[in-house]
Length: 415
Ligand SMILES: *Cc1c(COP(=O)(O)O)cnc(C)c1O
Image (tube, rainbow, N blue to C red; front, side, top):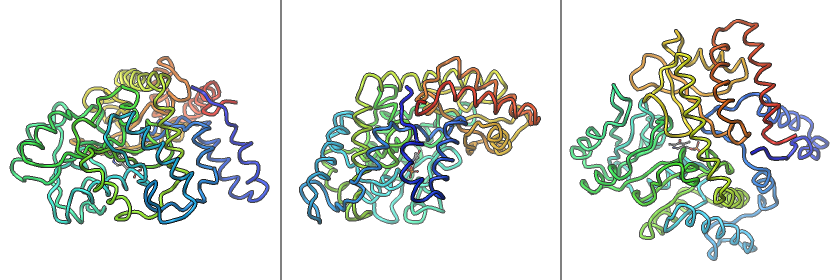
């Protein structure tokens, strides 16, 4: 769904005042438009979202919640936040929503703050198996303040080992169980996680940062009926501004709100919350439902094409927007693959591989689908991968030219 917002015009004011930063922004706009954005966590927001982010609401201080602020002049800030909360609860069928978290990580921090005390035991996916930093990394607050027990995926199938989840839960009696991942290309079985949590008296936290946009479009199961708290981002498949979101039961609403402000954050970013409202409005349309289903279909097509080119797909495929693959059968490590692909204008991530030697690659179809590309383009992209990975200068140059041609046909912000 190409949209029109020539970044050049938007940046005209800045170009006159601060050419140095204007050059940076223009360079980034060109980079996004002229290379292929295959990072699974990225997308292109609409011009309406970008305009809202650049609005004077960015100037407003609004600590607290609608109707109970620590500052004067909050009538429009209140209206923006009320609309955002209403749209989120309606879209996801949640009792309560908090749109203030500055990021996905801030949302997870607040969920833990609402439900846990330092030193509590938490069961979450191990980092090597696809867990996020906030799921117990020693480099993150989570690993320092809580006692994380990792579960993982089966060595043969790559699927979550639910027997292990249940056994670890019975043994460790965690205060909370976290489901959700940065690289698992299948849906967690929320009902099964709920049953395990109920059996051991644990809270269930669903970190749906990646799939929440698919949930919005009805292309993924909704964790809201199962989880006590759902953590999410608004900038991945959901296609909104950078930020976080929490959805929870009525019973936990007050604890969750207080865990965000005043416990872990200060003033809310009202321009971002208004932009989240805009994105949630867009995500409530039939066009977004069609988009979400196309994203998954495109990931399936791209995954099958990459398998045909020799990549070993984690779990053998995908049910989401996300693909993780081991390039080892092609004689490559993920880091080498990413560097060669990047040199050819194909931008993606590496990722941990649960049982592999090196790293894999992780990619997604949210951004290219927003650009309006279809199934034929996905198959074409897989062929470009193989050509770029040969690491021959002429091939790399040819792929770069083809990527340029492709992006000219599907410009992210129109012409
Ligand atoms: C992206 C992600 C986060 C963090 O989001 P940020 O906005 O980068 O802080 C947390 N958990 C999961 C599972 C994610 O995929």
